[in-house]
Length: 368
Length: 197
Image (cartoon, rainbow over all chains, first blue to last red; front, side, top):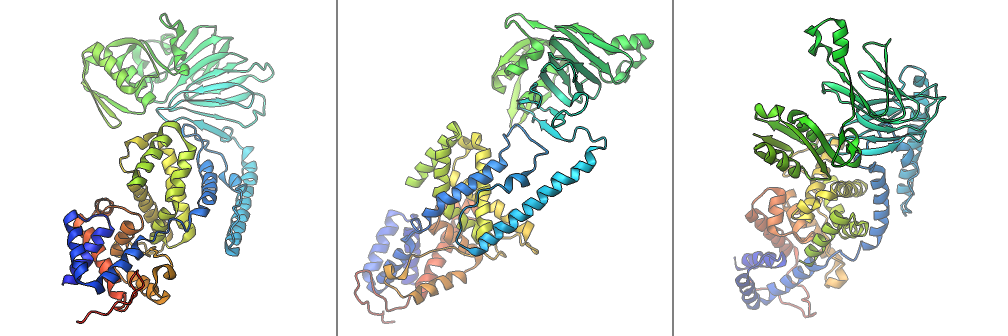
């Protein structure tokens, strides 16, 4: 029984869990039993020989290998290139010299497999390209809470706002440079009269020659907008393809997406008028900038906007869910600019101005 | 203790400055231990290596949130455990879900016999007896001895009580003691007499 106690105390000592009293007790017990004490010394030695020094040398080699895997994984967190072919990258992985022949065989098999898979990817889709899968070539999307800037093959710059997606053809072969947009983006299109640039959205197509403008078409929003900064664009509505709208600098076209929302109001002419509204872009005087495109500069801007809309935008901007428990407050209007501010600053400001309260719980915000 | 401070220093360097050097240092510091830990579950060196790499990819992806993590080392082991269990579920035909039923291969090293003044045979026997311990006991012993976790950390990692950890480490220690023959050379090289029982 005495020996049992020794092993318990020893296990505590070696795990660094023993109290001072326990250490002292162990000491006395071991002095009484020198034979056990020798065993104990051996166990201590066994325990404390560490492997630390044995495997350290290949750690840096292994880290190189890890970096290869890491770089394959990292497609800049905000961007998700859905159509890249990881197999192709894999086949270029620098082989780390390994002694075992078995390992080499493993890598050889892996690279052969990678080549085969790459071939499958490269050759199979060519049959399909001729069919109407026009836009499946390249997709860049942003998550809620992040933005990104991309350059298209022709040099056109695109700033993609949160929770948006743009699809385009790899080399813009064909008569037009065509992209498909869901969400909001600001385009600075490179001039090319031979090849007009066309943006397809769910509700309208925007045709341009060379210009800078903002297109907004989020699913779930009641309107789609196009705001022009310079140059000129033509807009074709999917609902009425005969007619085109031409925008001049600082014009903005607002299109109501859901026709049923205003259907009963009057005759067809009225519907058209209500459906499409021509406005001017709004200039924020304090910043001397256009509100519609301030998001490009990471400024969350509102101009006399209803709280309901502001919160929807804030949700997308910060990737949170906001619940507004105050019916009256929905129609409050605000004008404000937040530049690179944390979510709490925005909520604080809105709630202070409207005498509301808010609570943040993880990714959910409640306002009342 | 020293390692703990080093890890938290590396942790904040990675989180604040995207410091690749710190990331590498952390990787090299914990690689072999984490690999052994994963190996206990998956029993394949290559798979274990990839799992460790996956764990660190995860860490790099969430590096902005690292400051929120109190005990990074334990956190790494938790991810490693989850990844290993996922790996087993995916790749083995009859995955077992409870730790008690799982066959865990202990990766516990004792250095070489010459340094310890014991025969290779005894060392072999010690390894054998550890292999005969129940899986959870082996894993606990490994985490305490090899990875230097405190009883409290092991307890929270495996969702068991501190007392259980204490008992299991004791059992493992006693088992080792039982295997060591009565006649052994003590450290000083003197022959120790067997106890008269």
